[in-house]
Image (cartoon, rainbow, N blue to C red; front, side):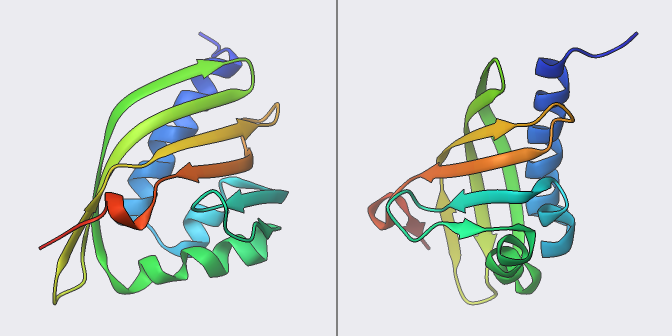
Length: 125
């Protein structure tokens, strides 16, 4: 059975969330196309290229995360998904439920990511 691109996009999103929880910044960045962009959260300076994207995710390497996909919609080469990420820094636990909008190329690599959330959405315990 061959997968259509929407199935491949869903797999990439699932892999993305798994790597946010269990991978390294390099693992996450490898899901992106070489010339991809990242804007997290929307309104901040976009990161361009895989090297800048890996640097952005470097903070993940020092914390423990768990993730849960709450809902996903795929249309054409775009996915919008709502998920929960719980970050344990060792000193506090931060929970946030962003909505990410990603576009993908024909190989289901991420070509752009925009995360919709604000600091007021964070719950710190």
